Image (cartoon, rainbow, N blue to C red; front, side, top):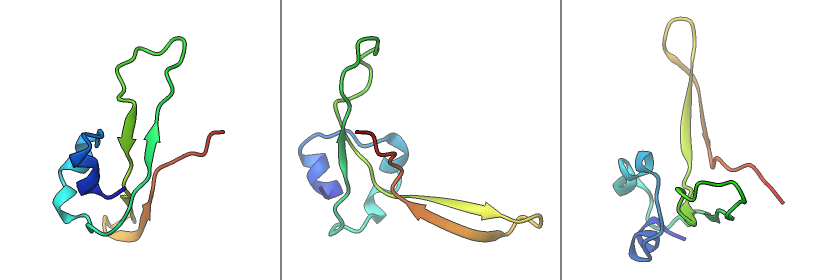
Length: 78
């Protein structure tokens, strides 16, 4: 689902993503995950959440970027 579709359908988008939402490519579809209510869960998490990619910088000892990793932060659970 694209970010614009998620906004229209009122699917939760994490706050850190909302900051750079306008810069996301509108043609890219991101996964929407569903949290299953567990027996001991507090229920504070939204049921559906859009998960776009994130970037992680790897710095060297001089403080400059040595590597950049871009990934969709999902761990498979089934």
